[in-house]
Image 1 (spheres, rainbow, N blue to C red):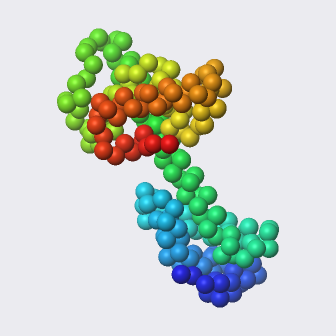
Image 2 (cartoon, rainbow, N blue to C red; image 1 turned 90 degrees about the horizontal axis):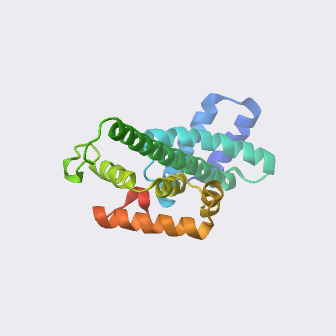
Image 3 (cartoon, helix red, strand yellow; image 1 turned 60 degrees about the vertical axis):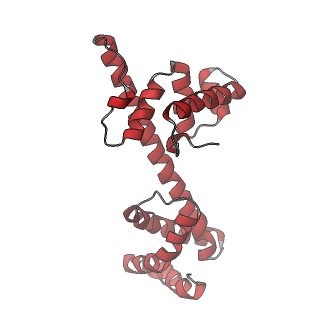
Length: 198
């Protein structure tokens, strides 16, 4: 575990000289600790290459917070790094939901122009079969259900969803829970992934 005596002299030198070399040295000393934070706080989905980039930004932000607040650098580092990890996970989830919504819209447009039976779940041959199955099942829900699930997957609260869709928060929660439960039952997913429980 990184200790104040290991990093505080480097932080002081960075504040005096502003050297990129010193910043890289500080990141290297903090990286094992930041990997521990990543795993301890449930950010294991972040790959190693991205962890290094987030570590650089997190160390930089922690140095700035140290200057602004007067708190110790190591006191500032965990929160700075966790904030960046949460942003990365949120962006990843939004990208996945956007991709699913685009696929659903493409499928709906194709069905309108060239009527055909809905695809059989057993015939889906995507690289990520589980995502394809979820896409199909979400696409079978009515538009309101899709909107509730989509906004919820983007991290919106039930109150925010209700304001967008002119529903009260309890209605949004009920719609989300009912439809996600139906999808889970149909697919019998052991690890729901995108539809993790609240």
